[in-house]
Image (tube, rainbow, N blue to C red):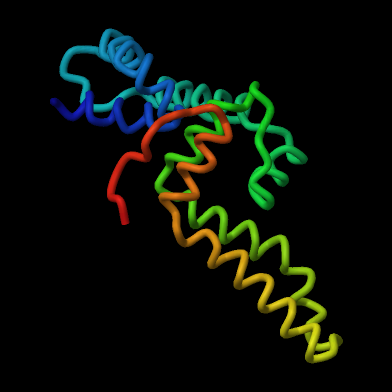
Amino acid sequence: MDTYERRCRLLVRAYPPRYRQTRGEELIGTLLDLAEPQQTRPTLRDSLDVIRGGIALRLRERPPLWHWALYRLFHKRLPDTYRWWAHDDLLDSGYLARQCATWLLATSPLWAFIGLMPIELVHQVIFFTLSRMLGFLPQRSLRLYQLRRHGFNLEVQGNSR
């Protein structure tokens, strides 16, 4: 694999994994056909077009905020339109980090008023937040549960830990 092709493969990462799996080679082939002889990197215009297309596709497939918040915070099933987005999200390596970050952001208004709260309520808020975050630790079983809820009967790829 030459330098030009490596850079093209890096650009194609802007697209969702499912798209790269089905049409990635076609997109890379098109970029290779556009290359001039002895060209070591795609032109700025081609690079921006590929990145723009990938980001636009990711944003088009993303569920609306209301559905996303229910899915992320309470594990509600998304409508069938966003089923493949949920599939990609569940199998992504940053799933656990996104879950924890969402809970921290969702509870951050409570943390702002912690100095004004009675100590018993502070303990309850801390316990609730930590219990929700620690509930995400059995990552494999949570992912399998979520995949089954969204209608996929797949095993989670990767390490079983």
